[in-house]
Amino acid sequence: MKLIITDTNVFFDVISIGAMPEFFMLDFEICTTDFVIKEILESNQKEQIESFVRAKRLIVFKLTANEVEEIQNFVTRRFFKGITDKTVLWKSHQLKCPLLTGDKKLRNEAEDLKIEVHGSIWVINKLIEKEIITKAKGTELLEQLKLINASLPHDEIDKLIKMLK
Image 1 (cartoon, rainbow, N blue to C red):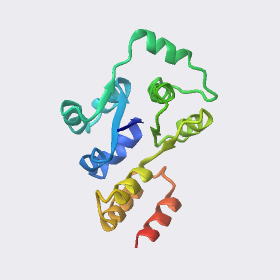
Image 2: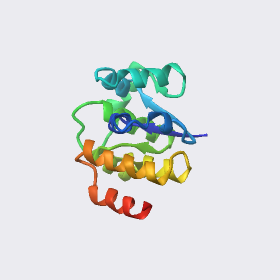
Image 3: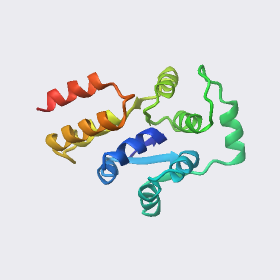
């Protein structure tokens, strides 16, 4: 099974549209870092994440002090205010696996490092493609995404919705 590293934004999107169980039905070993988990545990979406961690369906990389130091010294073209985004970028680069993010700066940095990168729209598209959800359900989830996340490319979402109808 192919590993995929996820940032905080994608979790927030997937949880907000009620698609967590389906997300974990994709044929990926979904992983993240303990820094991402800490951000989520400080939100009202804590329960959902904890249940997938307890069920061992979400792999959480607990970073050592040496790894944190390595991440802080990991040279990037863009400046990252916090370390959380840098942890998923570094881990994705280290494991040579795709990265899921909703953050444009993180996406651009990943692309510069030749890391395969996708976002929440891709997740919904994959759910439809793998027949985990119907096209109608996918359209509904995409419409919800537009309502909860104004930073997503609405034109891309609208194009996908049009194709699904």
